[in-house]
Image (cartoon, rainbow over all chains, first blue to last red; front, side):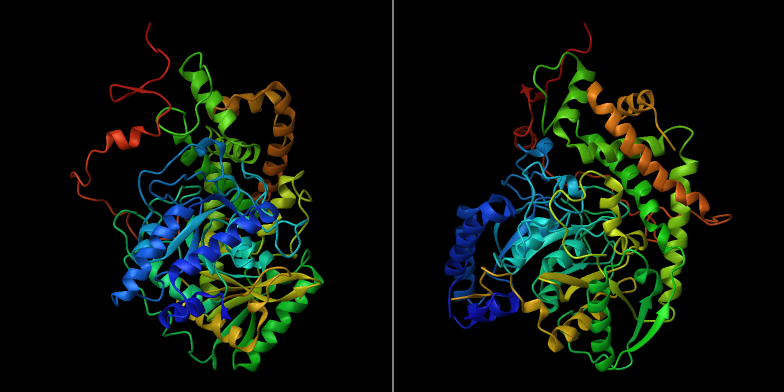
Length: 488
Length: 96
């Protein structure tokens, strides 16, 4: 049996153990079989997938295949896919067939990857439990009474259940890392500007970044290699060369300085999560890393900072959804204002409306300085804390989320309780830093995630540290009961 | 920090969201709690700190040349439109 990892399947395809069409049929079968219990996908693209797989097999026969060619994958439904429904898990876009491909989609397509479907998510990526989706919640494959995390809950649950070895995802305040932690898979949020956001539906433009959820750090390196790089179509895309991520994976950790963030180990952190993180730290020490405690004194203000900046930017970005040129339109509008206000009220769910209104308020006349400007100043303080820390250490380490997966419905009544789930992840978004979550053991029967944060454009170092840890441990290869870790 | 129902109506109006009367108390409650949490920012000493708008410090927003870069695909784009006629997007009458 071939391990259902990108590297494993890629080797199997190269050795002609199976074809991309065979592999794609199996992925589609798993997608269909798991959908009733997990609800990971909004759209399944069976016909296009089998067509793309046949093309990939031809490419391979012609000697034109790369590491990604012919491997099935899933795109988060926030990425525009030409000719395919792109909903952002919202009623507002429930009828939107994108006329073009996002750059991330185009690049992975060009590499020969086979998209089998579009992943469920929180509506417009606003949520930490995948419960705000217009298409219903995703269930955690480790325990279907629990959430998979969010907003990339469908991507994380699909990889955990091994529908495919990878799924794209996006991260504005933890939306790649927190679901990766709660589902026991690997996720990387690259540096702000590293991966193009062209065709990725905007939530909060100074925070959003695209990344990927995979089984292993090695697979994340292979995928990021194809995703990253300058794109003239995204004005925030940074023209910095992309290093060879795979080549850096085996660099020894001897002498690597790891910073333990004091503020990550305070009140609210579940004891079992802390225990797993400290065990992981001991493994890094065994591999030759040195450890130093660092303090980021302004970090406790990251949640309030985020809940000014993100809603403010969301209220501006989501103003484009007005029922005029695309998306949902209410029935029988009486006049133009009625068309706008009712299309938006009926098209957006309660959490999205809450954030639009929060953002509208903090940007409104008389409140701008007290809220938005103040938050931008605190953001600068948080950023300085990180820069100071990276003057002393190479990587920061801590938990990804304060607890393992919580129950469906447990945190929907109080938005603040839900928002606090991202307390350890938001800092990296505010500062634009690359960060990963990797599995580091279990709390009872539920996976626990370890977070690693690097300096700007430090993806290679992050991936290398994660890969070395995954050479020493096998947590990332654990699969929930009832799901199959391999193929053929 | 506590928002009144009439403040919620004003905010919803600015945001172009029509709320039903029965939805307003719940939004008043949750927005008040969010703003209460956000109020913690007051504690931070930000005296002469420069505000940070985005993480690309020191970089200037790149602009593209003002030229035609893609083909006119109006028919393709209008397939997603709720209502079109003769290549135009239709909305309720604005001028009588």
